[in-house]
Structure formats: structure tokens, C-alpha cells
Image (cartoon, rainbow, N blue to C red):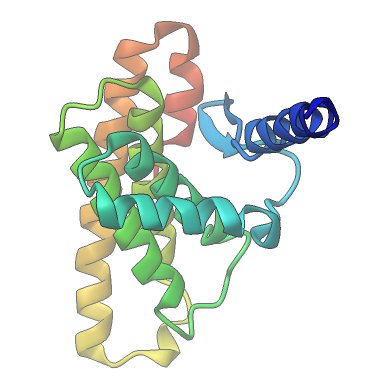
Length: 182
């Protein structure tokens, strides 16, 4: 009996330590939100188990604001223009739109977290980058007009979010004004 207890206690400690390491650290630096280290590209393979657990949790509890926030953050991190610059497919854009919907849902459920406000602004800015007038030769006139309309919409949305952030966080107002879409 004592030998079973002797092995059970360290095993439980290892499991609890492993679950603590499974959390992601969120950091805001220069007005932008990051997962873990802002200077390193997030490793999607390492964060995939966390994303899968968030997806499972959202299937069971669709109104869990924390899960909505973290899942939207992961969608943003893996589909930034710097990480995924391919404009030939809509895969990254669709995931950013899903992230925007998740962040909006968390906000509508009254999530009171400053990080959520920064996340919404950054997602809107990334969507602005996705609809920016680049590689216009790929698109028809109708598609160009639709893209311009979406670009202007997300540009206005991102700038409005950054203006609100500058009012809320006066110490970092310069960073938010600098991030506005020109």
C-alpha cells in the first residue's frame, strides 16, 4: 500500500505540472497582443493541443468567454499576414473572420478584459491587411470593389478600436495611435 502511494504522489505532481505548462502566456507589447514571446513566431504544432482543448470546450460551453478569447487569439497568431502572407486562398482570411466573430461574441457576453479590446483591434487591423489593394491583377472588377468596401470597413473598425484603446490606456496612447491604419 505504501509503495503504491509512493509512486502515486509523484505521478500526480508531474501531471499537475504538465497541465500548468499547457497554458499560454498573453503579453501586450507596443500596443499589440502576443502569445508567449512577441519576438518569436508561435509554433502551431506546440499550441495545437491547447487549440484542440479550446475547441472541445467551446462545443460543450459555447458561451465560455475565456475559451472564446484564447481561441480567437490563436486564430490571430497563426493567420497574421507576416506568418501567412498567401493571398491566393481565403483560408487565413476566413479564420481571421472567425476570430473576429469569437472576440465579438466574448464582448457581447460582457467579458471585461482589456486584452479582449486589444485583440479585437488587432484582428480588425489584420483583416484590413488581408483586404488591402495588393495583387489586384488576380481579381475581377467586381471582386476589387468588394475588397475595397471590406478594406474601408475594417480600416474604420480598427481605427475606432485603437481610438478607444488610446482613451482607456493613456500611458500607451502613442502606441495605439501609431498602429492605426493609414
